[in-house]
Amino acid sequence: MLSCEEFITKNKLFKRGEIIGVGCSGGSDSIALLHYLASNQEKFDIEVVAIHVDHEIRENSYIDADFVKEKAKELGVRYYKFRVDAPKIAREKGLSLETAGRQARYGVFKSLLQKGLVDKIALAHHMSDQAETILMHIFRGSGVAGAKGMSPISDKVYVRPFLNTSKDDIYQYLAENHLDYCEDETNEDTTYNRNFVRNVIMKNILSRWPNAIEAIVNFGQAIADDDEFINKQIYAEAIINEDKLVRIPLSYFLFDNAIVTRIIFRAVKSIGITQDIEKRHIDLIKKLALNGENGKKLSLPFEAVAIKEYDYLTIMNNHKEKLKFEAPFKCGEFDLPNGEKLIVKRVKDYALKEGQLIIDYRKVPKDAIWRFRREGDMFTKFGGGTKKLKSYLIDKKIPARLRDILPVLADENQIYAIAGVEISDLAKVEGAPTAYLIELRD
Image: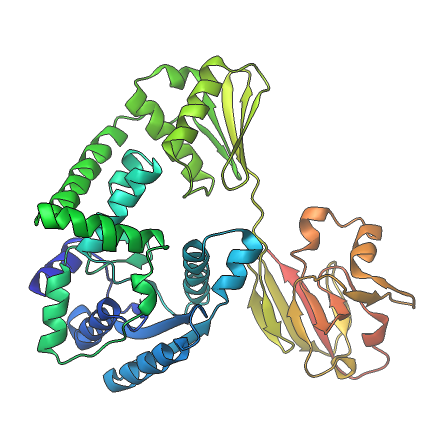
């Protein structure tokens, strides 16, 4: 594993004092990674925690969760367990089980990162995974962007310490340290794309070319080096970026194809579209820019749309990700996903400033929580009269874009306060010596 240490240092995967969450399924790769990082916490000056996500795909998946819990206990590291219903997500979103599981897993990771419980997530991808990923991306038609494979660090928070480590080295490490692990029977199910590539395609390739994994990985690195050089040649000052919208001058589409392709990839990435854009989409965007009529639209993955508008090709990201927020009803400051703060404090002076509300906390059920609006929420107006929260917000002329990100104080579907707007008649202050002041701040 000496090459692993060199790889971590060379790519600056960790910073001193960081909390590293290790995604651990219980399989050979993730158990080796958890053990290696936990055993070298002092060397890298990090704190390691184990993260297990149960996708509820197998009936006996709880066995893996318990196994990881015991390993974490043996290693003296904290353990977080999460359950996600990947089959349900796949059905509801029309996704493959593989994609649904990945989305749910990364949703868990993102939540831990946002809450500050970890600083980075360490993933156990190794050289064979890298080779398989490169092939899968090529088969999907992703072009150069996919042929590079995975990066040692992506989005500044996902790190892959084993990316330059072979599977044989991992097995050797497990044997030397007497580490057992769980065998996931779904790894043999070739209806999953990665398993098909691993167990059928790569198996046949390696039978003819034993060094194929190293060759594919080296090819990916060469592509990455070339791509980095070409990207440095791009002059992107005239590209206009706004919130979820990017405008590319039509004159840019007259450049060499290698430059145009990278400009488009850079543009879509800048508005949050980081996957599902393939070479065929790039070709359609080029065709629209060069030959399309003014005003013509092109639908793209992730609810994105490209429009030819006079001297520009405009790409808009119309995907609306529902923000989540939940906090207990108590005094304190709470960070909202949109960057605002919800402030709740006990006061005696009822001289309110604009945007401030006061509420009699004694009239609010103990189990009430702050959250965002849900279907079925009801609100009793100050002075009486109950109606649907949505209708009340419309009456108050609250813009549609703000209705779903206003914190509401709720017990089940009964709303006691709408931060920054109004309190319910059910929680009005009537001669109480103290009350809670509620305020939203940017």
